[in-house]
Length: 204
Image 1 (cartoon, rainbow, N blue to C red):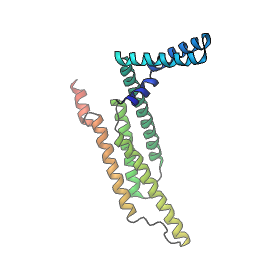
Image 2: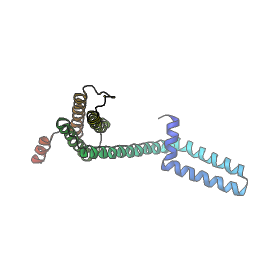
Image 3: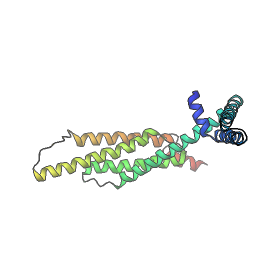
Image 4: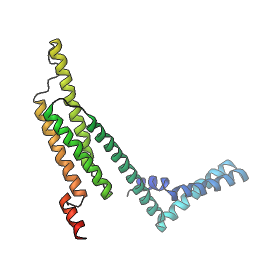
């Protein structure tokens, strides 16, 4: 961990907050009893001394590492929540094209399976969350293409935004993302499929 990163994480940790509080008290005492300049110097000096002691004793690095872990866990929860919202939007889409519709529905099911595997394992796979967002984007792009095509046919307008081989490309993209979601769910479950998990429970 670089010094700049360590300093930032330490300052955001509980130990850093305590350090700041002690420095503030020291500064306030001298500010009132001596002078503002003395108070500022006392606060800066107290913070620097405690900072160095925390670094030397290992308390600081542990606090910084704990803060980094806390923030990473928070970011992970936020990304999972975003993935849940994307999965719900995916499930709510109404796609008139039967072939694309079946792939979108499959993507929604696989997204749900992935999120369930996350809940069981307490872990996550960023690639799968990106795949859910991609599925939503692909489906939205195809729906827009269908809407634009309908308007162009109705009013006999030229195609001002051609989407060459759009259906095939969207279908291929959805299949690729479904495969990512399927593998991610399986990996999070320890590489065990449903039959394997049931067999293990039967043997217990």
